[in-house]
Image (cartoon, rainbow, N blue to C red):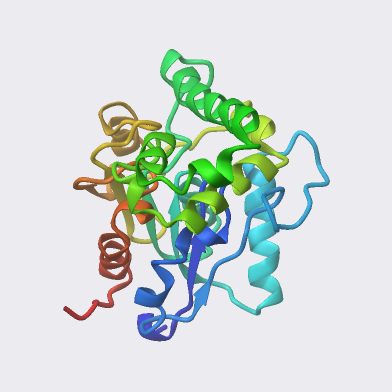
Length: 258
């Protein structure tokens, strides 16, 4: 199968949506047909029927979509929860390559580090609910965007007012946040790899710090290519969409023009 003719599936992180890839898609589209769904239970995505919703249910839903499209294997790139889903799809034989950007799932459920990571997301949700009446006005300020988005981006002020509003709405309207933050699932070791996998960890990841989760990832996927993405936060598409696109295309075997 020619990599240039193989579609590229993009999977976003927990509480986000396909909109997370808005600045990256135009850089990838000249090289691959792009499939960018919104996950089960997330804003504008299919409703979650099975509760509590688990990561495996989200992966099942993506598999059904691939089957409906007549696609057995695709390139897959995912961030956070999306990176976890990408690795599980590879385990199921559905990936040609995987580029996992700060993937979730490399933890021991109930550990202190896992609790701290999920706690950050839960805290952000609480603040978003409290600030909802003033959020549209407040996010007009670049400084406020930088402060509010500090857990997921180094330069949250780089996000436009509209993009920051979408991130806030995605967070508030995700119906499966508590389910996914409370799941006991995790990524099991994968050796040998079923396909080439890149683990691209954000240098300034405050949700899943590389020093903790990147180390576990390298232990569980010892044959994966591991690299650090400089000067970006947990959702690197906010800070540097071009770096994200270049990293994905290096994994798929394409290249972006300078």
